[in-house]
Image (cartoon, rainbow, N blue to C red; front, top):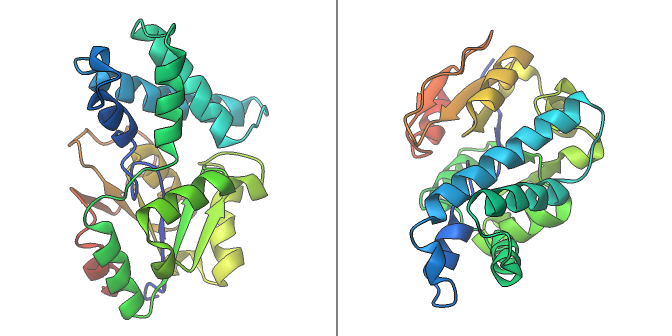
Length: 228
């Protein structure tokens, strides 16, 4: 069936999750971050994801803001910066102001012009996602923002992907699901979505039972894929 609905992961896919550490490193209050912000950002993101997986498989759900704080605390300690509460607070504040990647507004506008449903499907809590959408100014080109909080478990649990069909009354093969996380794209492929993995870093494909249908360096060609 033709694609009718394009659904996007949020953090790392539409929104640049490294932006918080990069911005803080550029501010004069935190000169000690200039040489370590990339490592800090990478550790923060990795722990954030790892904690979602562990909480999902141990039935210990909490909202994504708690996971985000826990991941940052681990990353700050690993970088020898755990004793800087001002830096911690600044990084957390900046996470609510993440900007979209440069191609996102035009890409989403093109999908809407083509008559597609557009939505976010994210581990993020509703308040976090609302803040990011408003900060990036993309609310007008999204039909909905779906959060795992409505089912109480993180991706890639099938109950999260179920939210798309429930919201848009569409079949699985009508959905193009886009994520910057290889494991998320793989999980959505196994669920039955057509998937695109936005592999900005050129990483290897995850060794999982399923693989994404498309691997892209950015989001620019998503409207073309959706029309196929």
